[in-house]
Image 1 (cartoon, rainbow, N blue to C red):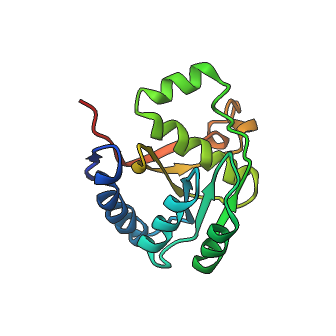
Image 2: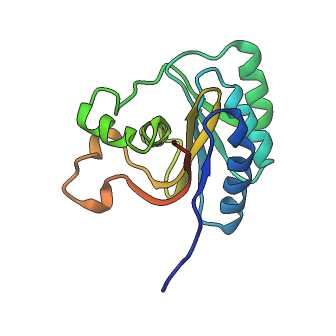
Length: 172
């Protein structure tokens, strides 16, 4: 069987975010996606994802910081689950971090938040992991996530895997 899909390349920052939302929504509609996880420092990006997907998928937002009370209320209204004060399991693994950053900082962050959501019990199966930089989103990956403890598991079926690339940042 051959499957042909296009990868979109978006400009980093807000300019490419809308196109990324469209591509993610289209992929969710295809099926087999259990949720969407997003790296969102202050939570506003997670709200944008939830609004763009309009109940198509469960959204989980991950930050290493704390969201403010008003933002948490808005998240709750939209059904966004949040993980705050998260440890970043790839950040301290230098070789892994540097290898992933060849695809852009969003690839590292997307895989990181996917692993955090599994560890916290908020994700399983195939998820779409989203991240970016410069105030926008530029990376979307379909991932079979795993907890950080399984990054080097001898059983490849228990390790994290990038199953599809939906979007990557356009780098010049």
